[in-house]
Image (tube, rainbow, N blue to C red; front, side):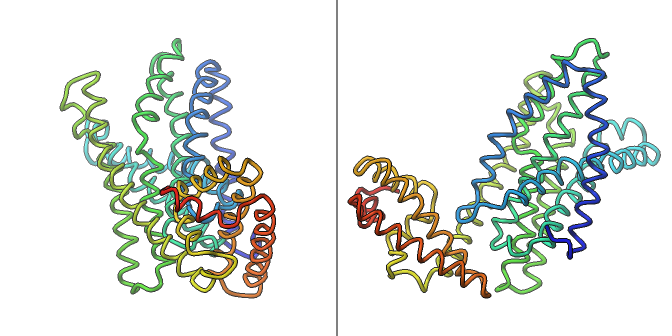
Amino acid sequence: MQPRQPAFWLLVGLMALGTARIGWIVLQAFAQYPTGAVLAALLLTLYAIPFFLFVHRLDLFEREPATMVGAAFAWGGLVATSLALSGNHAVFDLTSKLGSPELAGRWGPALAAPPIEETLKVLGVVVLLLIARDQFDTPLDGMVYGALVGLGFQVVENFIYCMNAIELAGGDREIVPVLGVFLVRSLIGLWSHATYTAIAGYGVGYFVTRTDRSLAARTGAVVLAFALAFAAHFVWNSPLLTDAFGEGMGILLGLVLKGIPVLVLLVVMYRLARDQEATWFREATAGEVGTDVLLPDELDELMTLSRRRDVRRMVRRVRGRTAARLVDRLQHAQLDLGLACSRTGQVAERDADEARRTIRLLRVQLAEVGVVRPGAVSVRQGAD
């Protein structure tokens, strides 16, 4: 809640309008095609939950606040989707008038969606940045929020596509059109909107957090990231490769070939962002390493989720579940300490002192159950 921020009221107002428009579409869908609407909602929910949890865990050192996560998802699903409906129709009509109906039918999705939808989605990341600048510490934060915006857009857009498919089928068949859209746009389209906006969001995060770089370099990163997202969306929506391998499975193969390079690009960018975040965390905790609150071994094992998990598993196997839970709390307290040390001001200092007190208390409790240095256990066992 940031009532003094104009961007906050922009978010509230646009979300209200988006809720009204998308809500009306959803209500009509359930009234006209109840079976298809229920099936689409169920499939997309089952699809979104694991995807949502996966994206939410991409940030290694800080779980994003629930309100920010919800706002990002809602911007994509309500604001960007509702505004894109009007924008896409306008570009389709313009393409049909300036070119031809055939051109609009074949290339309209590629000409309309990338400029309209990618702009609207990345603006959601920018609005969140204007509301809560302190939640953007590294480029990875921009990538996570971008992925959440894209996921919200993808879920709502796919629901609308499911309803359109039922209508095109004559309305007498509801299940088969929904399953077809879900297969192509959700399962095969794993690299769809969430991927595009994650790439664009990386550029936004880079611009605001990499202040050690020149303004020109940061601006170039934003432009390049958006251009990559735009190009990936354009190629996916275009007829390129769609008919190259024939009908049926050939179309699906063409879609896969168009999507795999984008997925590879996202993995590369995520690894780069993760390494940058690890460097940021090491720099933030440099003054604490070697003290009683953060041992060097423990810092190394905080760098990845798998290393933290290996430490907890080793402790649980040797000392039991209670000890493992204490180690989990210790790791979270050390992460809180690093985040507090990365910021300035009296609030950050109080948070850092509170984290140090918590860590020392947990060390006493761990010693009582026979665990003196949980980090050293994993290192001796060669865990990664």
